[in-house]
Image 1 (spheres, rainbow, N blue to C red):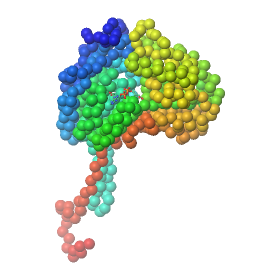
Image 2: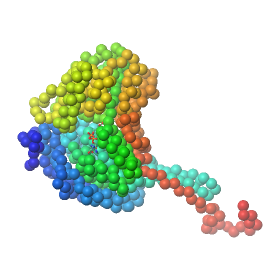
Image 3: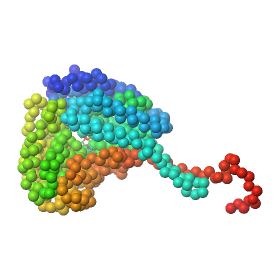
Image 4: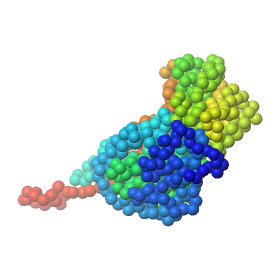
Length: 531
Ligand code: NAD
């Protein structure tokens, strides 16, 4: 078996190894024992012919799990051709046929063996805890379940605009679409797009994150088992060349992107310049405002969970706590409670957070913590030196809390790790100003017992997703994702009604069928007046 050259002795421990072996044996597209991850093109799991591969490592041990191909141009073209061919029939399949596919996918994703496989693959490749990995899938599954309503959400409009003249609109699919995913939600983010794009009659090319492609491969196999015709869903792997091929291919009509700012801006610009519809969800800095009248226990536990869960690698993680007035005296309790979190491998019982995704990510996070120190920040809880004896090579960082200022680099940049910045504000207005001056616009939350305070916050704060005593206010998929400002480019959000709109275009027909032309009219003997 091939090994990680930087960590030649790395191997999975007795807890993880059986999962890796079982998953590799049972699923066609993925390997977690050092083999290759396949492309999924035209209904086949195919080994790439590329000579460029990149490695997928277990972030807890650095064990080489899989190698993913830099899909060649010929293979990419095959995927687009397969999707274009399948579009001709899938777009004409009845909405009931497409709904039945989504119903069957939902059923398969809910089966414990399948859900377990996806969650285990996420723990191995991404590092999050098993409970959190199950949540990753569940939040995607909720999009699948909402997509089942397509028989209602795709209804068009019709009105008689003049005598015997009708105008009506139909919501029709766009064609071949593409979805580019980040590493932090390997199941949820592909499931933001797969059910929505397919139930509306499009065909789709998914490019998972090169760091954790396994969950998407299992989902693809389940789509096939759910009866999806060949070519309707295709998966191609790779890095920037695959992304650029998606942005440039004339047959691709729309791109959904979720990830960091640099890639998001690049894809939005390149995709829209090529005439594609693009939705781009990017980075974030989400603030939690702690008012002195808050339920202290709820507020502190919520903030700790939202700041350090998934090792802070959620785009809706709380990364800044703004302590208002007397709530500033709660900092000591916040630190003490954060210290108690258990940092270890994701399969370990009682694990609260696992490692960050890669040694490079860890280095970057440590660099930002160091920059805070240099700029006068106070590290009041320092998890940067944490070691986990059972996982000495893992990318672990313990919960870290920094008293910071808004001019510091660690405040201006997204950290994307288990690091919580604490700011102080004299009053609610000052806290709201801080949030509104931040360039990002994903989420902000307030903890208060006052309805009036909550309402003022909700109205005056300019971000897309507000929580009132709710730490991670990710909208369920009957609503749409609504991040704004620097966290989003494009006009149409993910899933919900927006998802239907993103993946459809209206066709409007006006028809005239005069009553006097109907077959079977009685003869009239009146003098014709030509009116
Ligand atoms: P990333 O931008 O590094 O990668 C995302 C995707 O873009 C990957 O598929 C990758 O292959 C591709 N990519 C990376 N660099 C590229 C480049 N220079 N040119 C073209 N393509 C490129 O993001 P990540 O590290 O995988 O994910 C973390 C980021 O995603 C964080 O910034 C997080 O806030 C963000 N995120 C946002 C949301 C949201 O809804 N706003 C949700 C989840 C994650």
